[in-house]
Length: 301
Image 1 (cartoon, rainbow, N blue to C red):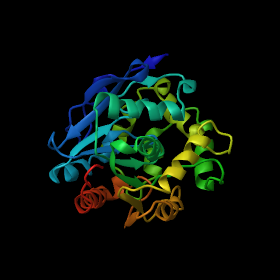
Image 2 (cartoon, rainbow, N blue to C red):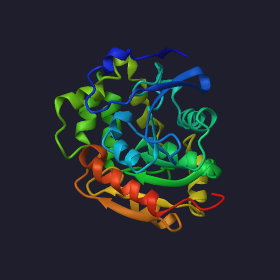
Image 3 (cartoon, rainbow, N blue to C red):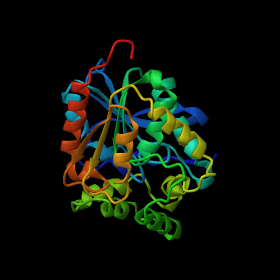
Image 4 (cartoon, helix red, strand yellow):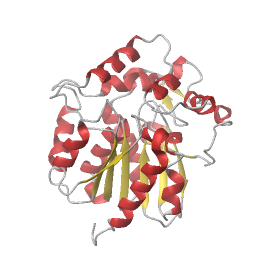
């Protein structure tokens, strides 16, 4: 496997993100980065970002959860942030991304009683992680995400996004993030989203991810996602649907998750686009902290 590693100096000027990364080896011998905050003995909360961001996305959420006494763990998916970047698009698959996160959470960190927060691709991965490892879960928070099976048509706005990624000779990561926000991001924040990718050779993961989303019923991930939906229909742990009020990409999935998951709670985060962590990060952090506090772990779960 051809693997690239972003030089550390690319992250020297990242604003508002003082956390020192830790590095561990996951399956396939890849190095995965994560940051951690809060008390080491606090209940673990795993924050999973999506396409094309990295753990920096959660910089407004992390301190709120840490101040609530939670052990916050925010990894960079393989191919993003400070994590190793397989340079061949073909090396990326939905199953591999699920396995890389599973390896970090359970093989390396040995997390139990974890609350998973999944945004965008972090939800596609996290929902699989949760339903395939329910004994390790305490709660789940789905935020502007979904679990496509290919049995329904994806929104036109998402299809246009996929076409743009396929056609772009140079992928402008910062522009993709800005296009999913309601607020105008300052130049230093946009630069932070570009930081993991010194040149086009580093961008195999953000190029690959749109084509890994199941859009036909016979997609390699469709059967596993259908099985995950079946498990969600009998889910017996606290589940929060925390979507923003202005996300054209995933808005339709929020009510479906709420209807499918028994006892699911819902909260709408006002003023947020797709990347609501940028538009309303503090509000999202408070919603997650309140959800954990109001839904204490039950004995044996």
